[in-house]
Image (cartoon, rainbow, N blue to C red; front, side, top):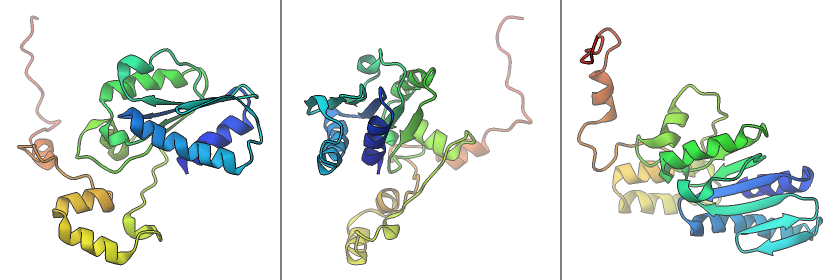
Length: 200
């Protein structure tokens, strides 16, 4: 679906810049390949002036670029019409912070796609927070392409917390976490003011 949204934006709105990011180039390339398949299926209805493994530029001035998700290498883009972050639970917070200004003048859209990866990072914070997002959760049992027999086999083969995270969209505690999120939240109270140890 994200690939179709990327292609739709590039075809319908001339001059659109669409960026696809993921933690690694291979992952971004995989999502871009879905864009390319849909583009070919439509019969190249707008010719491509440039067509590469990691991007395309259409004759209407729109561009779709797939990029590896490192904060140092993505800077420089602006006026982004659609920004897609795949495997968003695994991107560094610094990358997310570097991406948001790219939407400043374009009134562009930001999509974050992912299964959970612990109760940490910007994906968890945005999912569980109060910021205005359209949130869509699709668990494995909601997908008709995934057979119940396969899920039962996975349930037996995987640790329960891994199964819940991968197939039930459950934000689980991280494996290396000493204190649970609930324990940390319970230790914080708005009634107790923090000590001011600085100079007066």
